[in-house]
Length: 390
Image (cartoon, rainbow, N blue to C red; front, side):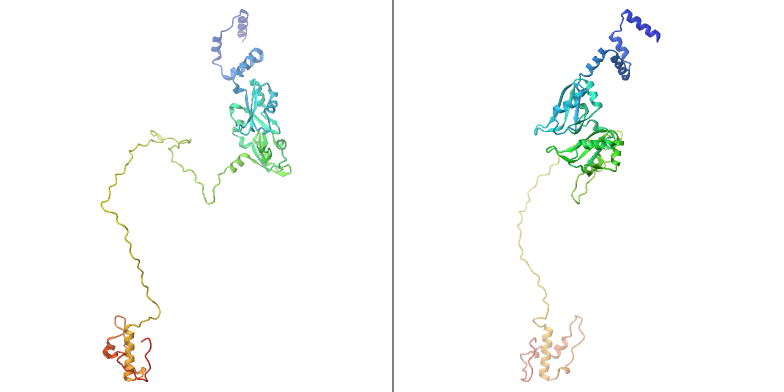
């Protein structure tokens, strides 16, 4: 070490300095951390080197431009610049307005002249502007900024059932007792600038958010308020509503090895020698054969008369059957010729024939049909008239 210092003093006395190329060769093996430490040490000892570092770092406006979100609807560009000018000279600052309505969109941009001013503003990203807690981050990080943090779901709270008289300042003062707040405000209507009855509070730590949820005393503005994780409230309100009786269909699982287009599949390995989806060979389009005209003329529709089935009539028949007529004639003729009482008449054959009818042959043998004509029988004056149904 003594020899190195002695050598440097001799070189300085002789006016010998290493060339730029020689210094590059010495710097290339150094790591990024070693270079940062070296430049920081030299910048703190020599003001000229510090100024050079500032100039190089501030060339790109990406490192000097801030995105500010959570602004009140009545915040102007002048108000925004005044709130951030405490950190350094501002090149540009403006609130973004809607082109059609001319109203504020709730966010804006601040561009500092030097990068160091931007870094100072990022050390205290939350600022109370016009009663709302605005938050800033580097514009190159996007519109979300710190909202992309993995633990945001455990730090951001939804506050519901707020009284219309509760302001953002009252909300922040009430919940600051549980821990340091990174972002928070009451949700206001864009047109009327009135409270919508709810708000959000984002803590810097998840432990502070848990304390706010576990707190039993949740009364603000004379009302019992609702405190829960904002992620659970968002997932509840964003569920798709289905009509009664309709069951939502889930996506059908595909077999392993087949990759769905546009989706990332983790843990799946494709078979060796195969790529999915495979291309399908093209086939020639099929053409139907030409139609052949029919050799027969088309037949027209032939109408047929409508027929109705005749139903059997029920009840007492209007005309007597042949068997009943013959029986009636036999009885009347026998009475008129013999004048015997009815109880002395010979009994009918009680045994039916195989067809299920009474024996008519015996009656015809005893009383021929020619002799049983009613018209040929002369009834005495004292004989009663035959029944009308005979």
